[in-house]
Amino acid sequence: MTFGWCGQFLRVNLTSGDLRTEQLPPDEIKDYIGARGLATYLYGREVPAEVEPCSAENALIFATSPLTGTLLPNGGHYSVVTRAVPCASLSCANLGGSWGPQLKYAGFDAIVVQGKSSKPVYLWISDGTTELRDAEHLWGKNVRECNDVLRAETDKAAHVCCIGPAGENRLGMAAMVGDSAFASGVEGVAAVAGDKNLKAIVVRGTKGIRLARAAEFLEITQRLRNRSAATLLRAKGSRLQGPVLLVTSVAEDTEALSGDGVRPRNCFGCTAAFSSFTDELTGETIARFRKESLPQVNAAQLREQSAFVDLGLDPVSAKVFLTPFKHDKKQDEVELAGKLARGGFGDKTEAESNPGRVGHSGCVVGGYVLVPSIVAAGPGNDSGPDASLLAAAESAGCCPFAATLMKAPEIASLLSAATGMYYSPEDVLRAGRRISAAGGK
Image (tube, rainbow, N blue to C red; front, side, top):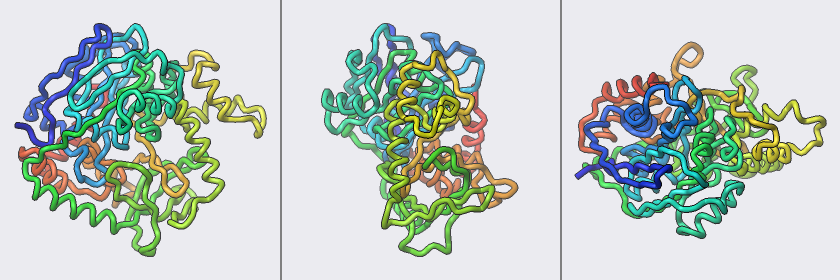
């Protein structure tokens, strides 16, 4: 009997249509913790070295962790890993929402997608039952339309991770989108899904998760949740586009009033709350988050942001790309985005503006989108978290914002109580170092 883990993954061969459940022995993957670590391990085990991104041998791997779907603060995160650029390190899209927990509740820790389908398909998973279905009627539809149709065809309580027209046209600035709102656009992960003709993965699970020492686990998570709920975070970083704010560091705001602070919307198990966002170069406070109102200007910007996500585009990369094509301020940027997503600017497979090989979905907070890019401790950020600790916390299924409040002993205790296997704080940090350095391995 396995605890924390489901103990199995789903292998999908899109070329043959074969679906096979395979065992995933926990002792074999213990040192990889989960999510990005597990996906990177599986990729290295399953895919030949230096495989071409457009090859049928390339794999697209979705992975959760032993803590995904539990009461861990912000514990809904999962990772999608592939090689999207020839001879480059692996690309990883980290997403929030409830899709990851649903995959666990349906009985799987991960999905390994290989091969190429000759026509558009989607994968339907429901409590261990799996089926590849035709998706030609979904090809060309935007993200929200796709979600609506798929829930009508499968289960109204199902959760969807899909690509939009941008992914179908294999744009490097395309995004994987979970639950219609959580978009991560990092160096071609969504383009690989489009190349494989995989429109979406739809999941519905009701099985729950078995914990080795449930009472101990609940005690630790409740303590963490209480601490997180009582802590307001000051964020620093830079404005990217419109309402999009890149967060490079967070710290506890000891001066904010107890009534201040806004929590992100719709993310699974979220307990984080933010008080303000400051430009790290100028020191200007760009946003003070309050519960009472949403500025109208940001509401309009968020609608535009949502339009980009509906097209399956990473808004930041896409807006930078479109800037030279705007001949006047009145020109409709959303119209240009539609043209871009549907291939109207030619074969643009990569965006120079894409900010790295690990991308995170953003959180909507008080009319802004906060995109985590938390930096490690160092000059000017001495109180910041260690990079290996962040990598371990994220691979455990925790979002980067909540991860900044966690320590290695707490992560070790959670993993030990969930799985029944012993983790020391050094085990956690060692795994984090391996995960953060894994890159193209």
